[in-house]
Length: 211
Image 1 (spheres, rainbow, N blue to C red):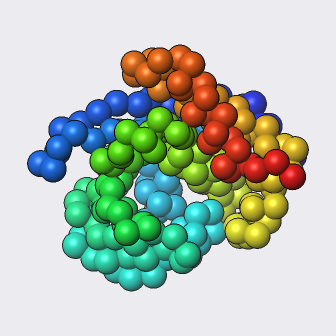
Image 2: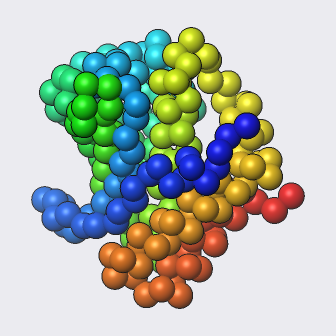
């Protein structure tokens, strides 16, 4: 049994912008504190064996300038690496390129803050349709998976089970609450409230379509 309200509330969600060489980009940021030491969280995020336990099977070279590929999902290149503080990488999916930046900060000897920024050039039509939740809810599910893994490192993530859970009443509630919180973050970043609320509802429908 997963405490959906606690899981959603554990994540700090923010929406912002950044100027890149190619122009303005949007930044979707998710941050959460884990009850685990820095080195353990770093290993969980960079070891192929452990990534497969909570995220997705990964192949390739997980070192600076190496190419990686997540099974059935994104691929990219590691563009910066500063163990155990974080790394940057391209995120190549569906013919588009965006960027991820992971930062790990110790809050005590046994507590670590995980902050992930996903940076992308997003066309206004798609942003109006879904807002930050389009990528944000996917990361929410991953951050929950990481927390479950850190609490029980020997457990193995079954993508089919996670997919089934996401369509259960409990999973649908998680997705709805997370989508709504991304809508609030979007409003705080300047999106009109009605537009952000409608985009959040469409995001919920995308991740948890009506049965």
